[in-house]
Image (cartoon, rainbow, N blue to C red; front, side, top):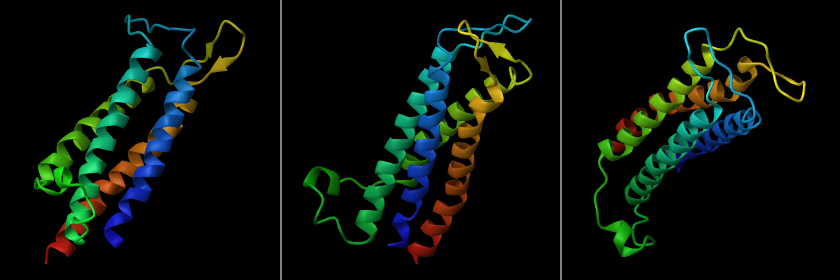
Length: 157
């Protein structure tokens, strides 16, 4: 059952990513530009984060199926899910792509971190505040990148 523990971290990371999406949604009515012409682009950044969430959910669905097979729970699974063998690449590919998307959003927002942006309603937006939930998500997913291979190794024997 230890193999299911990473799914708790996935839940924390997904909730943190969704909190980042929620924070970005508050900035939709204001787009800012850096002197070089780079746009803050909250809608584009939100789309990247939503796609990253979906990719992470796909990776962890594959991981859950792999764990179910390892623990002998495949008779509980429907026949369509129990038949194909899941490789580590099927888990790693969407996971790595999603991590790259989250990191690219964080790097993009980091370019605006010194700005104090005022929205049309008078409230202020600090990109650093928007990045806090994303940094929690990246740290949780980074921990998973260390934990899951260790679990694969320990359980393969």
